[in-house]
Image 1 (cartoon, rainbow, N blue to C red):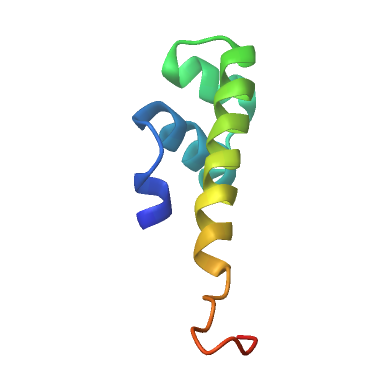
Image 2 (cartoon, rainbow, N blue to C red; image 1 turned 90 degrees about the horizontal axis):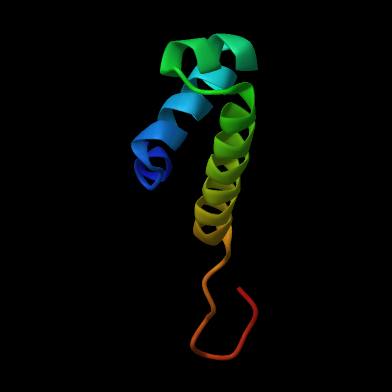
Length: 69
């Protein structure tokens, strides 16, 4: 939920409708009143943001004594 909160409202809606609800790009475009291309680019940017946020959260923290994590 915290990762989704980092997205813009439109990105969040597109990602949720496409990947959690399972709507097609056309269905999402119709729901939002935008083009299919806008859905594709918005989804791409939103997923990249999620990968970045979730990837950063999954990185091990460095130990201060110099030994590997």
